[in-house]
Structure formats: structure tokens, C-alpha cells
Image (cartoon, rainbow, N blue to C red; front, side, top):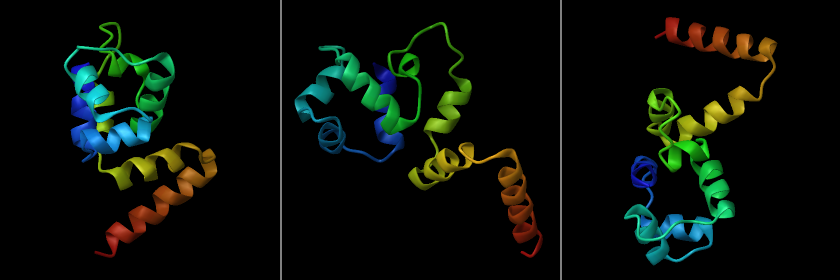
Length: 108
């Protein structure tokens, strides 16, 4: 579960903060990160939601391509929030947002 530590640190979270978000103890997070214990499926689902990555990435499943996931997981928290909302938009709204951002960039 080395990826758990990577994700936690990339999101600027302490073990204690993550423990609070997952409703477990800080000691549990330490054990997960050091392969001394393993989270329940419900805890893995919550981790997946918190970090916006598949469970397979958290548990280091060798059958998935981690390159794109690692790029996303290193985004700042506000960037992840923007991306989460952007993905829910219709194609038309995505195009509008992109056009607006391009116009803002051109005015710089």
C-alpha cells in the first residue's frame, strides 16, 4: 500500500487527518502504509473517493496503467475539485469552459 502514502502526502494530509476522514485511528493508517494491516473494503472505497483514484491504484494492482492516475493524484486539492466538477459537465458546457479559459489566457 505504498501508493496510499504517496496519495496522502500529495494531498498534504497527515496520517491523523486521513484517519479522521476514514473513521479509523492514526495507527491504522500507519499500519496500512507499512503493510502491517489491511483496510476493509468499505475503507478502501472511501479512500478511493477521497483521492479520486481507483481502488486498484491504492492496492497497487499490477494490471492497471498507473501513469495517468499518478499524474492526477499529484494535482493540488483545488485542481482535483475542478477536475471532478468538470467531468460531470455536458460536452457543450465543457466546450464553453475551455473557450472561456482560452480567452482568459490570451488576455494575459
